[in-house]
Every structure is written in structure tokens, then in C-alpha cells.
Image (cartoon, rainbow, N blue to C red):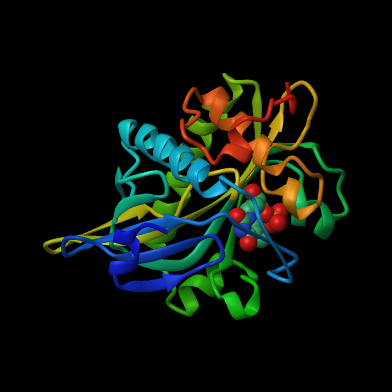
Length: 260
Ligand code: TMP
């Protein structure tokens, strides 16, 4: 950790990121760690260089989404592991968008992984760590006041725009966007409230499969103990054309045979 990080007030530490007080009011610094978890946090590990890659990949995707008019909390990348973000009020509802069957959908409905869905499906989860983010319906969300009907509509429509854009972007570099998870926050500008994309978009919260081989290029490599986790994240960055220089030497000098 560098000197500047240690001097800032730490506000929150999650599984893969730390949030620090930002340099100006209304800002935060988001620090990306190399920590990886699986089995609801029961299995932990370190993927060397993951934080650097996720910081860079998430910056790239958030900037691209900003360019097509999707509002995000991202302001700018500060260094290899940190980005400056707008402080938002996180909505305790997580959206998962699915294009193909995988993960918990495959388990829950007994469907075969990789099956293309007849249309994209959006699911809601209540963001509550102690409960492992249970799946909920819009009825629960409005009844318990986690988000208003307007906010649900806005999050749905933003999630589908993100899905359309990212599916095309990844397709162009030989990657299938199987599913991903989004978080949103409320941002106030005087009396007006905006819903903006928050958190990160990276191989930690997307399922990305190589189009030719179906090889997994995301956190499932850690979850399922498939090996070559860092290499897969690097390959995503390489294909996006944003492979960062100066990665820790034990990561950057490997050859990336995965998913070609
Ligand atoms: P799931 O199939 O396990 O429900 O996951 C759906 C998507 O959400 C997948 O892209 C992985 C992502 N995800 C996270 O980013 N964090 C989580 O804690 C979970 C459970 C899923």
C-alpha cells in the first residue's frame, strides 16, 4: 500500500475493494485489492495483480459507458490501484443481467450451463452481506422501500443498455458476455436525484467466456479452482487493448496461452 492510501480515512472494506475518504467533499477513493473469495467468503486467496487489472478494466468500461450516456460514479483513475469516484447513496438492490445460463441460474433451475436464453433476464437481489444477497422480486423492493418503482424502472433500463453495449463490445474481441452484476447509487444535484452506475465492472463481477473455446475468463476460474486466474484477467485486458504496464513481475512476465 502506498503512503497516500494510509493517510486517508478508511470508510469501508469489502472483499475486493476498500473505500477511503476522497480529497474533496462528495468524492471517495476506491482501492482495488488482490483478494479473491469463493464459497460465500469461506475460501480466500490472493490473485497477484488482480486489483491493478480490475481498476484498469473497470475504468475503461465505465468511461465507455459514460460516453454512450450511462451515468456512472467514476471520475478518474488516480494510480495503479485507485480511482476517484463520486460518493453516492448505494441502493441496496443488486441487478444481475443474464444472456446465457450459468452459475446460480443453472443450479436453481437445473439448466445446462451455456444455454442461450430466449431473451436477456434481469434478476434482483437484496444487498445484505449477512444474508448472502438473497434473490427478491420488485414486490419486496417496493414493499420494504429499498427502491421506488421509478428507481426500479430506471435501474432496469440502464442495466439493459449496459448489457447491449457491453455484449457488443466483448463480442468484438471474441468474448461472450454470459452474465454480470450491477450496483446503482443515488446522486443529488441540488434537488434533482439521478441513478448512477456504481461499484465496478470487471471479471470479478461478470462471466466472460471465450467465444471459440468457451473457456472461462473471469472469477469462476478462482471459484471453481480452474487455475490461471490472473492470466485470464490479463487476457481480457489485453484484448481490450489496455494491458497495464508495470504489473507485478510474477504476473506480467507469463505468456498468456489461455483462451486464445
Ligand atoms: P450467480 O450466477 O452466482 O448468481 O452470479 C450472477 C452474476 O453475478 C455473475 O456474473 C457473478 C456475479 N456475482 C458477483 O459479482 N458477486 C457475487 O457475490 C455473486 C453471487 C455473483
